[in-house]
Image 1: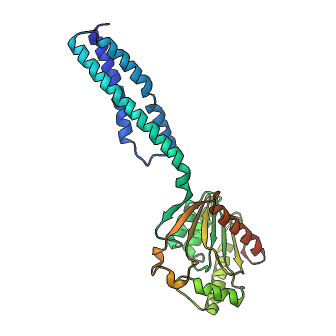
Image 2: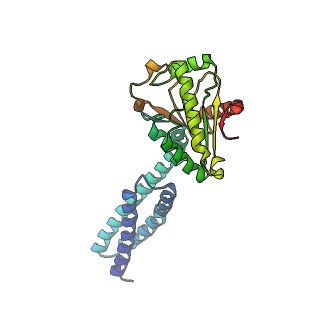
Image 3: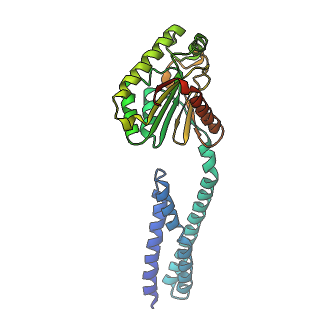
Length: 288
């Protein structure tokens, strides 16, 4: 093989290497993990490519001056490829070590328990959407109930825990102290709870039987102390339990944290929901 033929072959190899390098530069951080892993596997093949380029460079150094110049370019290309490979290895190790930490807590600065929040939880849920709340006004919203019906149709199990209209005066009085705007006295809160419970019953009664099986609502009768939503493997907890004057002026400004359901403190919150659900079996609004 003449040195020109060898050079043409090597240039083709360089073109392939440049293609790989270009792929690393244009890779979007928004790609799915499966696509990203496939791309990384292709990129990690640069080690064997660098070996081939070194061999070719050694052959070219034995030829004429143009061939030797090309050999030096190939050596520099090898260095670039190896640098990219090391950077990718480092990035992959960092992601592997940091994946658990990233899952621990995610802060969302606003939007807790607003209508878009409810809709997102219900619409994004794949298996379950659980809500533990104080007042049930939002749940009785017809648009949200329609979203829950669609979710129930596709197999999502919806469970609601809210203060029961049958709670004692002392429970309602305590609840009225921590309710976000608009604050109401205990007697008004009881009426609101009852009206919303009746509205939910009325709407859900019109759903198909199969759909109704995926919707349950119970009222709890103890002093409220937790407030969060649970969607599949994630718990979203805000800070509604603080006294009302401490709440932001606008409900949209309420922040919350996202916690993994299978790790602390999310695991404790999840157990709290299940325990309170079991305790509330005598105050079923909808369901068995």
